[in-house]
Image (cartoon, rainbow, N blue to C red; front, top):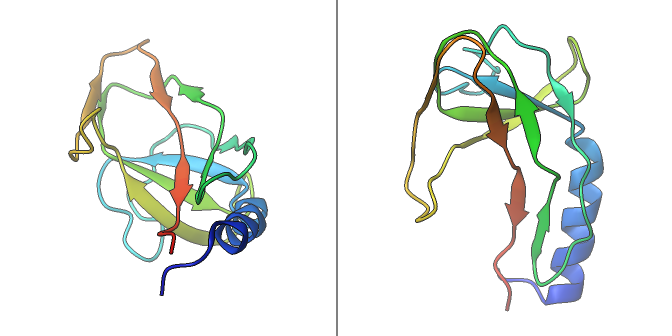
Length: 117
Protein backbone atom coordinates (compact mmCIF):
# COMPACT_ATOMS: atom_id res chain seq x y z
CA UNK A 1 0.00 0.00 0.00
CA UNK A 2 1.49 3.37 -0.95
CA UNK A 3 1.90 5.81 1.91
CA UNK A 4 1.25 9.53 2.09
CA UNK A 5 4.50 11.53 2.04
CA UNK A 6 4.50 12.46 5.75
CA UNK A 7 4.11 8.82 6.82
CA UNK A 8 6.68 7.57 4.31
CA UNK A 9 9.17 10.19 5.48
CA UNK A 10 8.65 9.24 9.14
CA UNK A 11 9.08 5.54 8.35
CA UNK A 12 12.27 6.19 6.37
CA UNK A 13 13.71 8.40 9.11
CA UNK A 14 13.08 5.69 11.71
CA UNK A 15 14.55 2.94 9.53
CA UNK A 16 17.63 5.01 8.67
CA UNK A 17 18.55 5.19 12.37
CA UNK A 18 18.74 1.37 12.41
CA UNK A 19 20.82 1.13 9.21
CA UNK A 20 23.93 2.53 10.86
CA UNK A 21 26.86 1.03 8.92
CA UNK A 22 27.56 0.15 5.30
CA UNK A 23 29.70 -2.68 3.95
CA UNK A 24 30.59 -3.49 0.35
CA UNK A 25 30.25 -6.96 -1.17
CA UNK A 26 31.78 -8.88 -4.06
CA UNK A 27 28.48 -10.66 -4.80
CA UNK A 28 24.91 -10.89 -3.50
CA UNK A 29 25.07 -10.93 0.34
CA UNK A 30 21.86 -12.93 0.58
CA UNK A 31 20.15 -12.93 3.98
CA UNK A 32 23.38 -13.24 6.01
CA UNK A 33 25.77 -10.57 4.71
CA UNK A 34 27.91 -13.09 2.80
CA UNK A 35 30.64 -11.99 0.37
CA UNK A 36 31.63 -8.97 2.49
CA UNK A 37 34.80 -7.29 1.22
CA UNK A 38 37.96 -7.15 3.32
CA UNK A 39 37.51 -3.45 4.05
CA UNK A 40 36.09 -1.71 7.12
CA UNK A 41 32.40 -0.85 7.28
CA UNK A 42 31.63 2.84 7.45
CA UNK A 43 29.06 4.82 9.40
CA UNK A 44 26.13 6.19 7.39
CA UNK A 45 25.15 9.84 7.85
CA UNK A 46 21.56 10.05 6.62
CA UNK A 47 20.02 13.30 5.43
CA UNK A 48 16.43 14.41 5.95
CA UNK A 49 13.62 12.34 4.42
CA UNK A 50 11.58 14.20 1.82
CA UNK A 51 9.01 13.13 -0.76
CA UNK A 52 9.39 9.46 0.22
CA UNK A 53 13.19 9.33 -0.08
CA UNK A 54 16.23 9.61 2.19
CA UNK A 55 19.88 9.61 1.10
CA UNK A 56 23.09 9.11 3.07
CA UNK A 57 26.28 11.04 2.42
CA UNK A 58 28.66 9.50 -0.10
CA UNK A 59 31.21 7.08 1.37
CA UNK A 60 34.66 6.36 -0.07
CA UNK A 61 36.28 2.94 0.24
CA UNK A 62 39.77 1.79 -0.79
CA UNK A 63 39.13 -1.95 -1.10
CA UNK A 64 41.45 -4.67 -2.37
CA UNK A 65 41.59 -4.98 -6.15
CA UNK A 66 38.49 -6.77 -7.41
CA UNK A 67 34.85 -6.40 -8.39
CA UNK A 68 32.10 -5.11 -6.11
CA UNK A 69 28.37 -5.09 -6.78
CA UNK A 70 26.43 -4.70 -3.50
CA UNK A 71 26.22 -2.57 -0.39
CA UNK A 72 25.11 -4.07 2.91
CA UNK A 73 23.42 -2.50 5.93
CA UNK A 74 24.63 -3.46 9.42
CA UNK A 75 23.77 -2.56 13.00
CA UNK A 76 27.42 -2.32 14.10
CA UNK A 77 30.90 -1.45 12.85
CA UNK A 78 32.07 -5.03 13.47
CA UNK A 79 29.93 -8.08 14.14
CA UNK A 80 26.37 -6.86 14.61
CA UNK A 81 23.27 -7.82 12.70
CA UNK A 82 23.02 -7.82 8.91
CA UNK A 83 19.88 -5.83 8.04
CA UNK A 84 19.71 -5.92 4.24
CA UNK A 85 21.45 -4.93 1.03
CA UNK A 86 21.20 -3.09 -2.26
CA UNK A 87 22.71 -3.69 -5.66
CA UNK A 88 24.93 -0.99 -7.14
CA UNK A 89 23.19 0.89 -9.96
CA UNK A 90 24.44 3.09 -12.79
CA UNK A 91 22.95 6.50 -13.65
CA UNK A 92 20.07 4.80 -15.47
CA UNK A 93 19.21 2.52 -12.52
CA UNK A 94 20.70 -0.57 -14.18
CA UNK A 95 22.62 -3.08 -12.00
CA UNK A 96 26.37 -2.58 -12.28
CA UNK A 97 29.56 -4.18 -10.97
CA UNK A 98 32.41 -1.82 -10.12
CA UNK A 99 35.92 -3.13 -10.77
CA UNK A 100 38.75 -1.45 -8.88
CA UNK A 101 42.52 -1.76 -9.04
CA UNK A 102 44.84 -1.62 -6.04
CA UNK A 103 44.69 1.88 -4.55
CA UNK A 104 41.48 2.87 -6.38
CA UNK A 105 38.63 4.53 -4.50
CA UNK A 106 35.10 3.15 -4.68
CA UNK A 107 32.43 5.75 -3.89
CA UNK A 108 29.01 4.58 -2.66
CA UNK A 109 25.83 6.47 -1.85
CA UNK A 110 22.95 4.71 -0.05
CA UNK A 111 19.34 5.75 -0.66
CA UNK A 112 16.02 4.46 0.67
CA UNK A 113 12.70 5.15 -1.10
CA UNK A 114 9.05 4.44 -0.46
CA UNK A 115 6.19 4.49 -2.99
CA UNK A 116 3.89 7.41 -2.30
CA UNK A 117 0.11 7.52 -2.55
